[in-house]
Image (tube, rainbow, N blue to C red; front, side):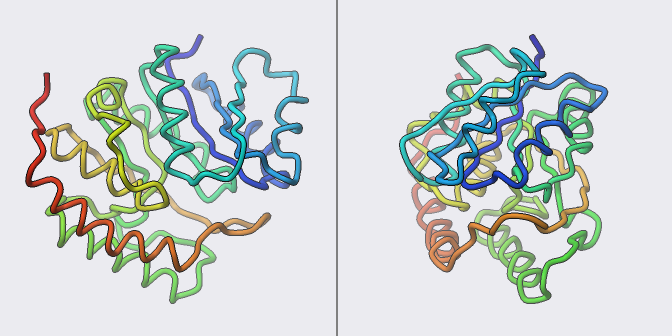
Amino acid sequence: MSDSLVIIPTYNEKENIEKIIAAVFSLEKEFEILIVDDNSPDGTANIVKNIEQFGTKLHILERKGKQGLGTAYLAGFKWALEKKYEYIFEMDADFSHPPASLIDLYNACALDGADMSIGSRYKSGVNVVNWPMGRVLMSYYASAYVRFITGMDIRDTTAGFKCYTRKVLETINLDEVRLRGYAFQIEMKFTAYKFGFKIEEVPIIFTDRKEGSSKMSGGIFNEAVWGVIKMKIRSFSRNYSRK
């Protein structure tokens, strides 16, 4: 059993799923993968279940319907903690997150002492490929907005490519995480920051998906704007001392 689990949430990713799984398993470090599928109508889960060559390194958690990115990761985190993995990763299925950078995220925690590492689009300039300028600007200034509201010294506050050490996920009460869409990524970083964990950003090159369709929407943006303010207000009455 590997010490590292990569959680990949899926909803209609039949074009990408076999290729992303093969890419992760081709790395020189051994990772295991947990696919969290929300009953994809395109048969993503069946494709995963029919992959046999990776044996017990490939796992799948099937859910009854589309319940949101945050709840998919929370289910995956609980599964990972139960199975005793030491390093738990978030990664998209669409190759926007470069699989090879999993090793850099792992090294930041396992070798350099970070409690949490972030695959950062904005650590060293703006490293985004194939996004229209409007979306680049929206993402960049969304991160600036989150920094302003929260006080976090993190360049890419909305990043979804991350490695958590086990102790971070054990410390955060996963049942109290409120934001369930893409703003979930912000809340997890903010909570880890408030608990005083060491967070390190690792530069990556983010490439927009080539196959399948994006899950972004206006509702996701609105949740991030107002959810961050509510999250900050709630933090004033929370106790962030570690047991």
